[in-house]
Image (cartoon, rainbow, N blue to C red; front, side, top):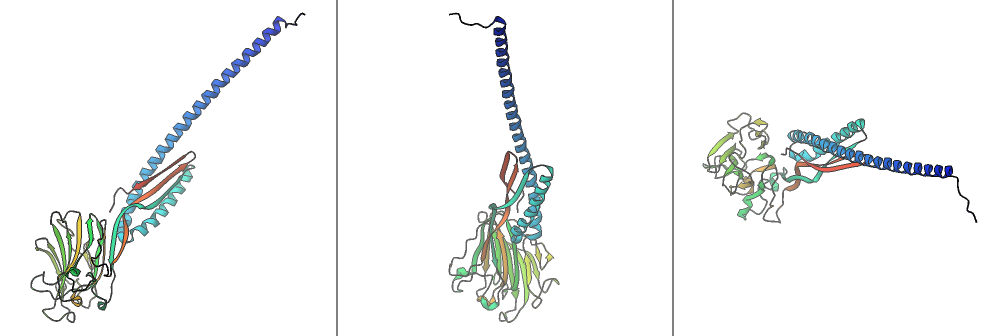
Length: 343
């Protein structure tokens, strides 16, 4: 049997068509592979660029928030710092996000991170009537000598706020300033260096508290040397008895809004131990009364007698941390930013 065969010219055409098909497949594969490599390279470079942009944005945001924190802190004090900072950050974040959306399809958000922020206790004692007991003393029984001395902060490097509103000065101020007074001591337990503020009034031996004498605020160093002194019968701006309470701001160095040279913690290096002490043994009716606010980045040890009425203690933010989120198509960047400055 004779098998049919294709003419020579048709075999040539089939070989040509096959060769052309193979060539197209090879060329197409090369183009496809090159395209995939180009896409991968462009995408990777784009991601790197977006990450760099996110990091640059985070750096600028950190600087903005540090300046904001310093300004908020100076205007509100640490007692109201957290609330004011949250409100300011919300406004800042909204405006930042709006500006970013106007420029590109990018989402940026900033929020306060309380858990990552640095802070410490804020110890406060509110005003009360004299009949309820002395506000400047550990409210333990007077039969316990330890009730006349207690710490409000230990291991503190930063202090603020630190102020008093004094409604009754302790009496009777004797010949020696150590006889009767309420003392605030800031000391470094390692070096022994200390700074003291003593409050007292002079009633010339008359019964207390029925007779109200001259009010005194005095500053001493650890050796007992008097550095500064103010008296209600010497300074016209110093409120006397019947002229209202005396407000003392140790951090901003004012007495009843008058700028003075308190030289708070002068010559004392951190870490601080802050102690309140009454050296008047006459009983609670003769001691200082009023309110105080003491904030620090240290610790509050509490009273030895757990049955005693404790001051109000809550944690306050001093050096805030922020959660930063930067997001755009294909990239999400988030990090925690710590304030560059701090209290």
